[in-house]
Image (tube, rainbow, N blue to C red; front, side, top):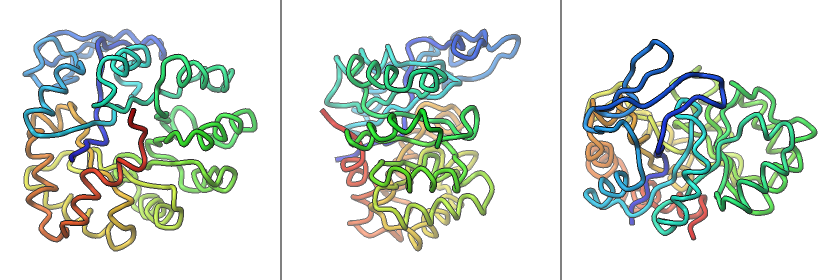
Amino acid sequence: MIIDAHIHLWNRLHGEDLGIDRQALSWGLAREGERIYYAAPPSFQDSLSTYERALAYMDWLGIDRAVVLQEFMDGKQDDYLAQVRRLASKRFSCLALFDARYLQDPMEAFNHAVNELKLQGFLVKTPQPFPELNLAQLMPFWRACAEQRLPVVLKDGAPAEVERLLRAVPQIKIVLSHFAGCSGAESDYRRRLELAAAWQNVTIDAGALTYQQNYPFVQAQERLHQALEVVTADKIAWGSDYPRPQLHADNSYKQQLAFIQEECRFLSAEQREKLLCGTALKVYLWN
């Protein structure tokens, strides 16, 4: 089995939650205000990242399942991902986007996402726009995530703040996204690796590990090799960041997978299996 633990889907691009005028155009292009940019590779004629298109790519490459994360740059996709859950629940684990509503009424937002929409965890972008995770009003929310074994995927996150949350709610499942923020400050990246090594319920996804590199991703190979000296392979899940154009136009989806399957020759068969499915199977909910 192969699981891509970091993809993005949207059936429309918007910036309503942030008060931004954003929309999909065509051939991968999108508009944000006056700025035109690539939201997807130019092969995406409608500039939409639908679950049907993702399934076509996954079937082509032999990818069995995928974890759908969210980003403010695409607009909140909770309602769309609830549809994806109904239509393709065996192929996708879909996470809600933590936004300002969770600060206003955390448990109402939790119940809507989990009990009504049937989403299976949360993506939290920190320290921007949410610098503080350990607010008193959020503790019931974090405890509910821990009780229901729902993964909380953190994009970035100050290591000290993440550790405070782990000490407050020791059973919470934390995923440190974008390979524990390896493109940021080296000291913060190393501290996140140490957190993953120290806490049984902290793992890493490798989304964007190959960002701004060319195949066969020599720098990413070195990063992964070095990380495995700190954390074991069952703490890392492969992810492609599909369909971000800087990864899937510059270098194909097939190359993102071949990076693990073929190029990282230092991996044992057991390590490769854990990276490609074992870690994701135990961290995310599949039903």
